[in-house]
Structure formats: structure tokens, C-alpha cells
Amino acid sequence: MKVAVKILPRNEVLDSQGRTVEKTLNSHNYPVSNCRVGKYIELEVEASSAEEAQQKVKAMAEFILFNPMTESYQLEVL
Amino acid sequence: MKKIGVVRFLGTNCDRDIWQACEARGHEPVWLWHEDQFDINTVDAVIIPGGFSYGDYLRCGAIAAKSPVMKSVTEFAKAGCPVLGICNGFQILCEVGLLPGVLVANDHGKFIDTWVELKQENACQPWAGEKMNCRLPVAHGEGRYQLSEQELALVKERGQVWWSYKENPNGSVESIAGVMNENKNVAGLMPHPERAMFDWMGGNDGFSFF
Image (cartoon, rainbow over all chains, first blue to last red; front, side):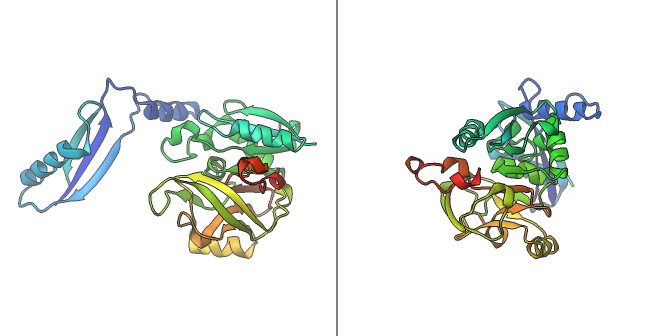
């Protein structure tokens, strides 16, 4: 089963990359706000249900994929 | 003596070296700030130094390519005037479309900081290099030159390959280290000639580039 992991810097953490991208877009007449730049990971796991797949990837996310002090994540079974 | 514009972005870190290389050759360097456009009649040549412009955010060179100064550099290049991009400057010129291809992460995944032997494949008149072979330092994590097969065939046919590595250090297609545009007034290379100006720097093969 294919699962997506979306990782973003936490709101209270300064995201300098997001700010730079936002500033560049705004200066070229693409008005945007609250731009955050993160990571997107797609992977496949053996699972008989979406819940099982979610559980397995949640363990992986907490093991290594994100740092709870600076990042938050979301899982999506594709 | 030429008046040479040296572009500075946030994160450029070879700017002072380029400045000194220009002065060592008797040229007059002037700074070109990334937030400002410039009058293309005020300089004779432009150099984009190496570094990590805008922290390499999104992709190396991506944000720099959209900066005000690059509008003027593009206008300057399209007018047939000489532009040289070194390392991150090469990445920016590719990203802005003035040079063909793209530079991606080294095939072995490691940053390399060493000296390489180079062979000149085709001459680039404005950026001399009368030497057919030279030895220069490289320092990059994303220096693997890539382009599609059709583009590569075209680039070779038009004699746009400038330098190639004698021993490929990063997985670049056909060991390409530097290329030119079709007009041969815009050139880019990953190695750093400004870091090899005098014997005390470990070699002087970079001297003839400026």
C-alpha cells in the first residue's frame, strides 16, 4: 500500500526557505502568504488495511522521518 | 583594462576572490547587487561567482535566477557581451536558461573539495584560457552536469563544450566541466579558476581565465 508522508516546519519555527520563496513569488506579482517549505515522502508498505499501513508508517515517521521539536507531519494512504 | 561587474547574492562567498582575480589582471571590478538592475553599457563583462545564493533554497540557483540583477545579466548576455559563471554562477546561468543543461547532486552523494585536471574541448574567446590543459580546484556537492541526449548532441555539434574533466569526479555526462551558449559569449564551469591564480595558491592555471 502506498503512503504519503508530508513534513513541514512547525508554525512557531522560523522557516527561512518558506519566507524566501514567499518573498520571491510576491516580488513577481504572485501574491501569497504563509508559505512553508517542507518534505514529501512516498513509500510502499505491506498492509492488509489502510489503518495498518497508517500505523506502520506512523512508527517510521516517529523513528526517523521527522523531528517533533521542529517539524510536524501528516500521513495519507494513497 | 576591462570594467568587470561582479554579481553578489545573499550567500555568494567567492565574490572577494573574483574581485582580487580581476584586479590581479589589471581590470576594474565593480559590485552588482542582486536587488538592483544595472545599465548594461556600464560594464564590459560580468562574472557570477560561486557560493550558495539564497541558501540553495528550492534548487541551487532557482531563486537567484529570478532576481532583479539577473534580468540585466540576461539583457547583457543577449546583447552578445561576455558573461562567466563559476560553480554556483554556472548553476544560476543554467537555471536562467542562458546555458544549456542543469547541475544536480554528485553521483556519489558526497561534497568534493579537490584539484582536477581539465581538457579544453573548444575555445571561449572572451574567457581566454589559452591553455589546452589545466589543473584547477573544485568544491561542490551539486556539480553533476546533465542534459538530454538530443540536447547533448546539439551542444557537441555546435562546439559548446568548453572544458571536460580528465577523470570524472561527479558523474557529469561525458565528463563535462564547463559549457558555453551557442554564441560563445556566455560560459560556465564548476572548477574555480580564481582559486588558482598564483603558485602560492597551489597552481596558477586560473590566471589566464580573467
